[in-house]
Amino acid sequence: MNITIRRFDKRKEPQSIEMSYPLFEGVTLLENLIKIKTTTDPSLSFNGVCRSGVCGSCAVSVNGKAKLACSYKPSDGDVIEPLAYHEVERDLIVDKTKAHKTLKTSYAHLSSIAILENSSKVTVQSDCILCDSCYSACPVMAVNSDFLGPFALTKVYRYTLQSNENKKAIDAIQTSGVWDCTLCGECTLACPQGIDPKMDIMNLRSISVQNGHSDPNFANMSFGDFGFNNF
Ligand code: SF4
Ligand code: SF4
Image (cartoon, rainbow, N blue to C red; front, side, top):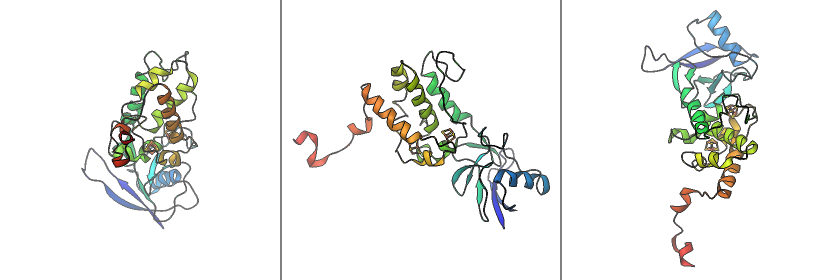
């Protein structure tokens, strides 16, 4: 029984290669990776710090779905790849800078409120471990790399629940944000923490409408012979 790992080193080869390794049954994927590295292939690179689902650093793609390696137990034939929509540094290690930059950018729009810097003014409570699983599951990222993405929008929603200064936050997510989501729910399915970004985005849409915004796509829709203008 084997697992396949997609390997890549941006310092050497322009293309990734697939390599097969023996499966160690009954233990997590992270323990498999550690065993492979210590017994078979010391060059294999991956992340995994806390080994208990807290740090979010070990998220990878398994058969096309994001999983935390420290909690997923692999099966024969599984294909392990780096998270989608991230630049691959080496093997299963990705650069999360861009994804987290969208989060900081959305917060930067929130003007004087330094949420990420532990502002004493507002603290956004969330169980998010910034694993990026939802981000890599989101199909919008494939066609719109400017999309803020699910975890950034979830954090903005948490913020709106705690702050009386919602308007700036809501204004900041009207472009490449709340209306660009397709509400497919893949982010919610991917989240190991049980967070529901899709529901948070739906709530953000309601709050947006209450603040005078509307879906920009709605203005471009055709209603044919039954359009509103024909009443
Ligand atoms: S519900 Fe929206 S944010 Fe979540 S994965 Fe689908 S498109 Fe992306
Ligand atoms: S919302 Fe869930 S899936 Fe997304 S980064 Fe946070 S913990 Fe990970």
